[in-house]
Length: 196
Image 1 (cartoon, one colour):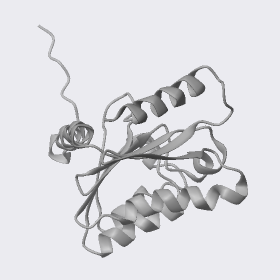
Image 2 (tube, rainbow, N blue to C red; image 1 turned 180 degrees about the vertical axis):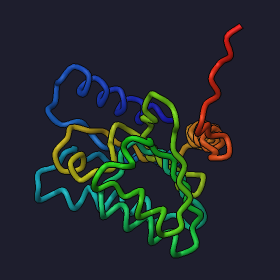
Image 3 (spheres, rainbow, N blue to C red; image 1 turned 135 degrees about the vertical axis):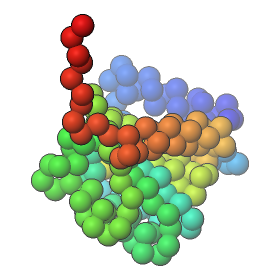
């Protein structure tokens, strides 16, 4: 990664961490280009469509695969984009949190109904990741839950980047969780321990 990228990322982290700005940033990064595209997040209402457009453009660029690992997913626009990719023949896999997916407004049920593979945790803790991998080459990650509330009102950050090493690390994490959350491994009726 170039020094310019790390300099910009450091500025973002300093501003977000120490409150030097009221609005965290969304960064669009490419390893092949030192140019960074930065947008404030949340944006004023008039600019919100531009943010959604950038995120949608990154998602809809998928041609072969899309892996989603999301705690919260209730944005109808992003849900329709994921369904569209599935209809185009893109292999879509989703990992989510079991508690959140059952909430009113969650897109997870609609994705399942559309035939998209979805797996969820069975643990006491949250599956709190928030990342997507497009065609095994583009990583989208940050604090953003894929909800209308988060996109329009919250102070969030999103990083969209092409970097083989980061994509590999996140893809390994996705595959690890995907296998861990395999429904054949669920325990529906845990065995009680026998007293000795």
